[in-house]
Length: 389
Image (cartoon, rainbow, N blue to C red):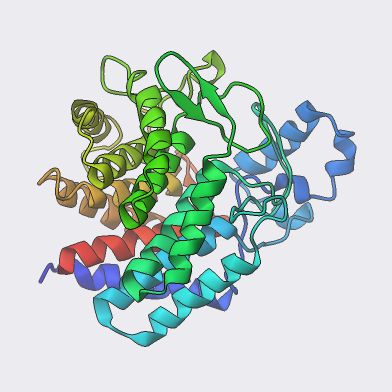
């Protein structure tokens, strides 16, 4: 047995005890508009962004002083459900099955009121350089990732109702507006966004969700949409194997966890469809990812050219992506272990939760529920399952 498994098991146990004791509630990086200071922004997008970014980027957690309260999280519940299902597969303990079902039932009851199909959004209003998103407004990246939880549940538990929900998610995805080009199209970030969208990660995760649902249902209409999304992103891969966050100049940065989303999406599409057209792009992108986003001792870098801030989302997604690529690269598991051990030792509080970020001289210890607790739980449970197989 791997000597590090005990440490990983202890980390998972401490984490889930903290989460359950806090009733699955915590902060989110983008929750700043729930502050009582919001009226002072006068509904101006720029001022809303300033308020959000001050709270988001402050190494000191300002939320308790500014009226921002811990909230539940739809995407968090999706990740918790997936982690519980993996622990059920690993141990056979029915309590994990029950906890997964409870999370899925919560998601069913908290679907977006803006959609007849199953889709989910944030628990708060959100403003960014891309525009505004209303509270509960469905967003593609979260809906696609949550949809995977229902596919997991169908495959593990066997309840066909979960597959029907996954199909509903796909029905929502294929209605999302698309930015159509000569080389594929980008599935937009939200269903209400009519402007051109050139952001890659949500489109590729949507392609993954469509492809995996196709494999379970045989619905070829889903593949046609997924293929176009894959073409759009792969045809815009940079010569070194990287992808910008988005093609618009304002989105020209290259970061760790969004690259992980793209790679997961592409690998998932290829595996579930058998379409190997862009297998070389996958290999080139993965090599770039592995060589660009980690230090020798396992620190996850935020950007390809900058270590700080060391962000818990980068750590979680790195463990998750590297675990997913274990059958693709024999070095993936050893690198995932480095990242996991470094993160547990440097970013997990003695109470069990994971810190948000590390800066050169300070630790931002805010307990983010989705961004950190849920993503780390899912990543660590999948990782330990892989180690124990």
